[in-house]
Image (cartoon, rainbow, N blue to C red):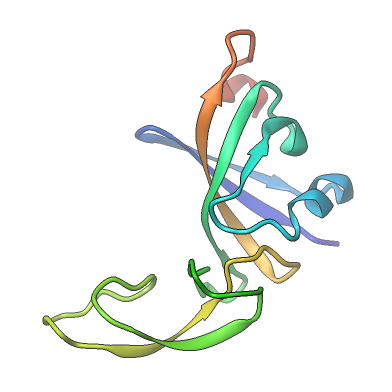
Length: 126
């Protein structure tokens, strides 16, 4: 059984929700970073979301621009995901996940793009 932890950003507030329903998780698998999805897919009727990031069970982040869902070791500089250098020009080889959601992903970060007028608030839906 696949289980995802959703981190939903709404301005300065964020919310967490775990989903493990087979129908919900199957619709998320195969989506990539930057894709938009309807809220009905994950139980938030009236909302539209964008996938902004995520990580696997070991904590390795999803990196934009990496094809597929497999882990890879890439050379990261000052603008990389998962690395903050202590001095300018320093680079390091880090392990990251591809930009596609698979069964190995645990955490998915979402940003609220649009909320319809008749939609309930996030607190009520949680």
